Amino acid sequence: MRFRVKRTGWFIFFLVFIGLILGLILGKAEFLQDGAASNPEIALSRQDSDFQPNIKTVTSNPQTAVPSQNSKSQPEIKTPASIPEMVLSSQNSNSQSEQKKNQKSQLTLQTRSNSKTEISSQNPKSQLKQNKDQKSKSQKTLSYPVKTTAAFRAYKPRYAIAWANPTNFGERFTKDVDGQPASHQPIIVLHETAAPASSVINFFQTPHDDENVQASYHTMITLDGTVVYIVPPEKRAFGAANSVFDGPFGSETVKTNPHLPPSVNNFAYHVSLETPPSGLENNEPSHSGYTDAQYESLAWLLAQSNVPDKRITTHRDVDRSGQRIDPRSFDFNKFVNILHSFRGVVSMN
Image (cartoon, rainbow, N blue to C red; front, side, top):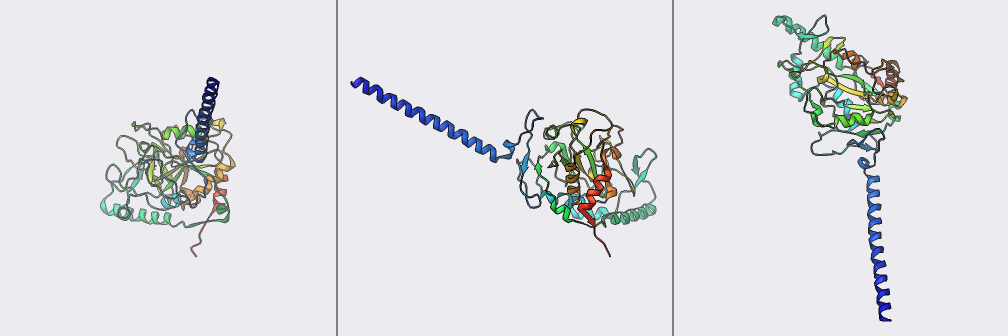
């Protein structure tokens, strides 16, 4: 009888012990599930990538939200909504004092027949006169005050933060490799990814020591219209190697690396559209085109800047390598119409 009671007691103790273990396991699983749901870096899932990029989704209003840093190595940024207006409406320089000095001695460029540029070798008096003329033209470019519209305020795109590795972007320079002032007015260069968005993010977040491999955009617009911030606008994204912008005031480019061709990167803000499936991994001259959400989000982003329409260009137009044709199948008229519905020029009268 005592033996039977003993066995029963041990059996009850064993059941209680098993119950406690199961309770702890289930509780931990529930905690992990809740943590994943609250952490966008864990919860975000993309089917077109073997591993998840370091991307943080943001659901609050982009007009007021300030993103947090993912690591100590990430650069400091400001409110996403203020990014284009803060940088693209001003000179590209590292300090206000240097910027004012540079405005007094603009770099004079002379256009060659092959669209490349060189520093002018005019005499001092002629050089001074040309610098004054260029400064006057530069000031006219700045006088493009705009205001956003009710349509802009009504459009609320989803956005995300996916910072590039610091090896894939750099500082904007106030002088070129020859020590001459580099104070061009900002331009906006439009691209397409030619790969799924997650693959592009993974590449930008991978460290690259080879200068010929380093690449990045400031911002990317995914197929569903999500605005992905990749490089802070005050930094120099590596979006267009060997490039020249031919604008109303002549050819503009800056050589910042003695080992690489001159480019527009020093004064460009690079925005890329995610390529649709029909255009992935091929060099066809066209594809099915971009979504309405991409056009609207692109216009929303650029409506916050006062960069004139004439200084919004494409990778195809600035490229001098003869290899870039993006963004393919881009309807520029459609984009401009939406842009004008999101921002209007302020009358100076």
